[in-house]
Length: 289
Image 1: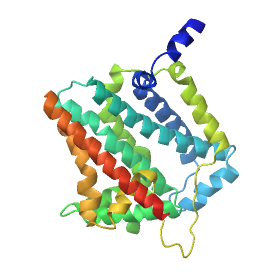
Image 2: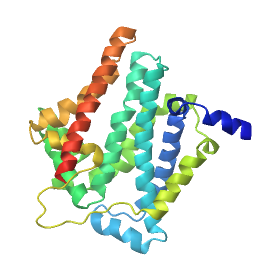
Image 3: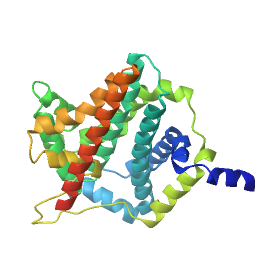
């Protein structure tokens, strides 16, 4: 055992990162998110989101823990999924037919929407601002914008009922369908991710999940952390350009990723450049907080 530990410590940090089971960790975090989400869903009322979200911590046994577990495991799921995609692209392990590749890559925007709708469902200042911006962006899409908004959000007419249905049923089902062929080939074992599980539980116990009440007179409300770059872009560009075309660019490049090594490298560098620029806009938005 000591010898194996010494061998592990001599491995370069980059090699450890590349060897980590990112996909398995993402799946384990998703399991924790679904488990805690079931507990929260039993107490949640879409007609009074802020009240029920707040009362979960007061009325439900260990309510603060369950909210924290759902929040932090969801964040871990998304970040580990991104890590999994980056490592697999670097190692060039994914060699699938185009249709299968697009289907698998659709899990990334699906995960973004799943995480985003969770923020909206909180019903606090951040959730309300994020939902209003998302509805405005949907309505800016020519021809199909109103239909998309009625399907995903429709906050003005239906409150959070449609968002709730998409979060607990629609997006979960679509994500499962998109990832199912991949999940059948790869398994995630809890014993391989005990440290991740322990850290998630520890953070959930010690750090309350964020909840931001409305503050009258506040001129700037920051949305979810992954939404900040888009929020900053909306200050300078048309909602359709900033909220649809620019966010869709890396997804389209990922869908189109060619197999030819040279063209593939160009596409990957383009995605990396997009991420770098989006990070810059995220930092600019953070400076306004």
